Image (tube, rainbow, N blue to C red):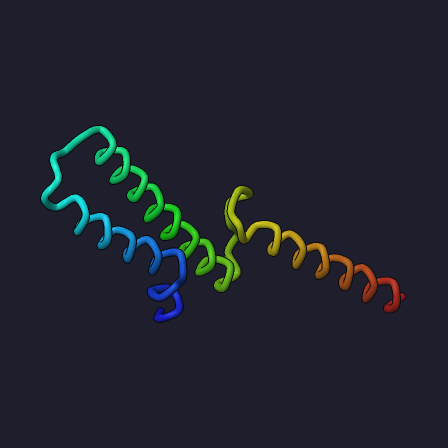
Length: 92
């Protein structure tokens, strides 16, 4: 679980959130500040989504096709299929 909590994406999002909080604490609320916070929220959501996908991959579950882990899963499945076909041919 520690690997997920200290993943670079989540760690970077939290530290940037802390820095943004310090910078906007005494500043008036403007549309730029609102956009900055929305952007930060999206960054945190993407970091958490990546952590969830890595966890699913470790458990052997399928991830969404647009996940950064999906190409790795596809490559692994293709390799396993090729090995199974080779084993079937040599077993004849």
